[in-house]
Amino acid sequence: MTNIAFLGTGLLGSAFAEAAANRGDSVTAWNRSIDKVHALARFGVKAAASPADAVRGAARVHLILKDDAVVEEVIAAALAGMSPETILIDHSTTLPALTAERAARLQAAGIRYLHCPVFMGPPAARNAQGSMMVTGPKELFESVEADLVKMTGRVLYMGERSDLAAANKLLGNAMIIGLSALVADILTLAQATDVNGEDAIKLLGLLDLNAMVTGRGMNMAKGNFTATFELAMARKDVRLMLETSGDRPMAVLPGVAARMDQLIAQGHGAEDACVLGVDALARP
Image 1 (cartoon, helix red, strand yellow):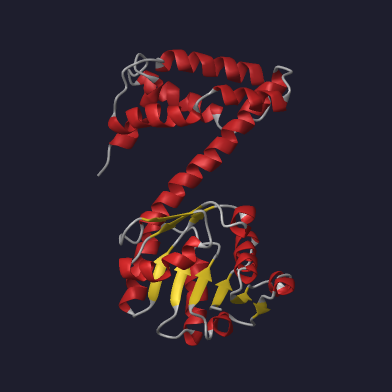
Image 2 (cartoon, one colour):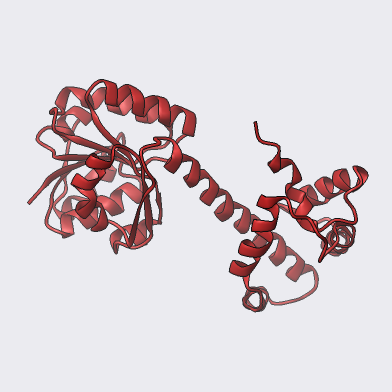
């Protein structure tokens, strides 16, 4: 039985703590709202009054916190209870630049730190599904790899560049959030045209979205804007969508239309609609 601690028991942290306790680990947890920790008592999770109390005797400490400021605050509060052998595993979604700074500072102080953000929700965390990205010292990762594998369906070690998992977490979340917003616009169009919303979602199954990401996405990344769907024609279709939706709120398409207008004014109208990504190629 391994002693582990969870600092932060929101939806995801609670699910991780529950799953760990069900696997037979000895779990202690802390959260600002202590009621959220007490709700885990039925799984055998012990509540701690402070971060330092939670981490005493823990081999691993898992952070699942809101943002960089909270991560810094909670780590500072936990240090008094950590032993030199404790491994700090941070699952929080954080700013890449601050993650790199924090990792360098902690490692210089002798603290064993890995950044391990995840793509999973609470149900996936309870059932060891989803994906976990890991950055940090390879030897440290290898020492806990078997434990991390138990938490998720897939563990991807991305190397020792400490901000890389943080950057990729933002990339993935951008897709999730952007897709959610676009689906909202599709449902708005369905409402405006008296199409059943569930039928509209089923229709999306006709589209091979993975192939679109691989094909159009790679063309955008490489700067290949040879036209198969001209930007000017795509803009016409967006006009039809906006006219159809009328005064209903739209999350994404008005911004897409505005960006298309800028690019057409710059002379890109005959290029492929992938030219929407042209400015992403201008890297420092």
